[in-house]
Length: 332
Image 1: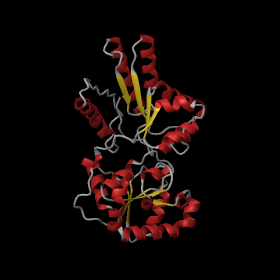
Image 2: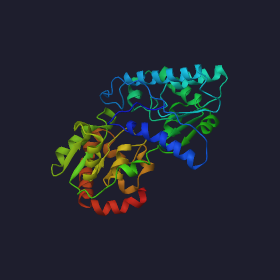
Image 3: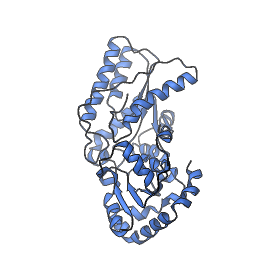
Image 4: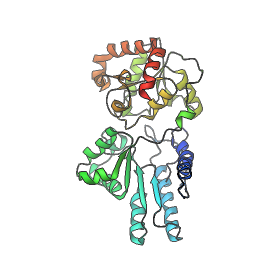
C-alpha cells in the first residue's frame, strides 16, 4: 500500500524500490511470494504548504487504494496468509481492511510504518487536530495492525507516552524499532568528486516546527557563507543531491523529527549533519554532530545562544574535511 509519489519527496523512490526489495529478499531466502504494489489515483501532486503531502489528494489516493482492495476481496483474490504493508500507518484503509478480513473470515497480516501523527505536539497533525478523536483513531490503527514499525526509539516512546492507555504487553508485542528502508540511498547519493563550497543547507520543509526563522537569522549573521533553503529553489531530486554534495553543512534546528531523512541524505553526500541534541537525532548521530538543544529550543533561547552557535558553525566550516573523516566511521 504505497504512499503517493511526489517528486520532491522520497515517496517516488519507495514506489519502485520497496516492492523490488521485498521480491529480492523473498527470492534470496527461497520464499515463494507475489508482490503487488497497490497504487491509488493521484489528481494533484502539489504539496500543501508546510506539509509532507497534499492534504486532500492523499485521501483520494488512499480511498482509491482501499477500493481496489475491496474489489480483490469481491473477486476472491485475497487469501488467508496474505500480508499488507502500509507504508504510511496514518491510513484509514487499515481499519477498512481489518473490517473486511474479519467479517469474511480471511486472516491477513497488516504491517504499518509510522511517520508522524497527532501524538506529536510539534507535528502538523498535532497542532491542528482535536485530540478527542485523533488519539483514538491512532490507537485503533496501531491495534488493528499486527506489527507497527518506528524509525527510532524516540519515536516509539513518544507514541507510547502520548497514547498512554496502551497496556505495555500489547505495545511490546505489536511494535518494532527498525529504522526506515532507506538503505538504497547509499547507491543514489555519494560524496563523489564534487568540490565542496561554503554552503550551509536547510533541507527541511518550510514549516513552523522546522524553525526556518533561525536559519534565516544565521544567514544574516554569517554573510561569509552561502545559506540555502532548498524548498525555495524548486530543485529536481538530481539537482538536490548535487547541492548536498557541494554543501559543507546540513543544519537542523527542528522541533519535530522522528527520523530526519534530510540530514541522513546530507551525511551520505559528504555534508556535515549539524543537529540539536534532541528528538531522533540524539540516538542517531555521534556527539560531534550534536549541539546543545537549548541553542535552538525556541527563538528566545536562540538569541541568547546565538554567538555560541555562530562560533560553532565557523569551526565546522573551517575544519570540515577533518571532521567528516572523524564522524564517518562513528555514524556508519
